[in-house]
Image (tube, rainbow, N blue to C red; front, side, top):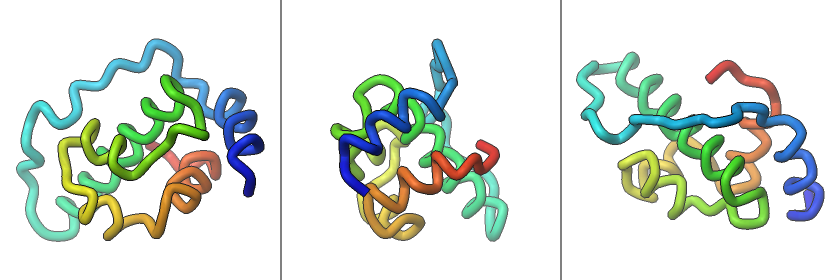
Length: 95
């Protein structure tokens, strides 16, 4: 998928206006499978904010990792690349 297509779809599909997230301010305190789910959710929320603020062309794993308060390695554990992350976001998965 081209970045221009991603950019256009991002502006129309991620409708979280004025989305301010206190993510990464507090450590995830759960353990086991629940912790994994929480981290994935934090990464998706951070990606949604990045997408909204900077657009699809600027969506990067490094920026998402910074915003989520996790390492890039952690982001790559959940998503293959920025396109995979973008597709997951626009697929309508519950955040």
